[in-house]
Amino acid sequence: MWIMILQKIALDFLLHIVYFPLWWYTGGLKKAGLYCFDLLLLGNDYLAPDVWVKNIFVPMFGQTDWQGRLVSIFIRFVNIILRTFAFILWTAVVLMIFAVWLAWPVFIVYLIFNLL
Image 1 (cartoon, rainbow, N blue to C red):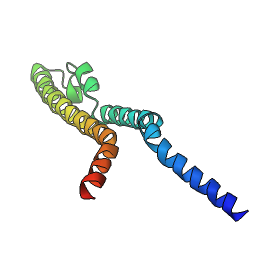
Image 2: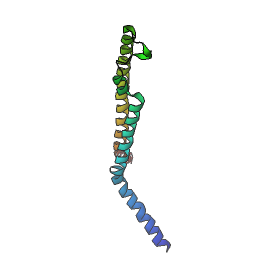
Image 3: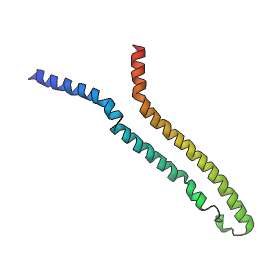
Image 4: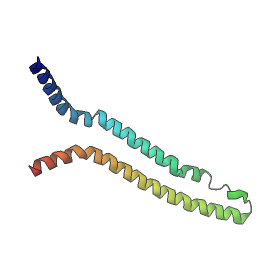
């Protein structure tokens, strides 16, 4: 009885070890991709460069004279540039996270075979 239980556990353990790389690059890859996409959407919601572009000609603080409009356009233009640059950096960080996800098992196998 105990032998059959131990055989079942050993077989299940070996099947999980064999199935793990397949899961990592199929279902796990999909989950990681969706997570990274959510991170990009979160960064876009937080930085919102499109909102600043939409409102570039709207005067800030109700200053409708030409000086107020000029300052508003300048400030919003600088804000658009900085927020777009920050979003590009955020995109690079998210892509690096995804690349690490892809390369992690290969790196671990490389370490195992080179350290033994």
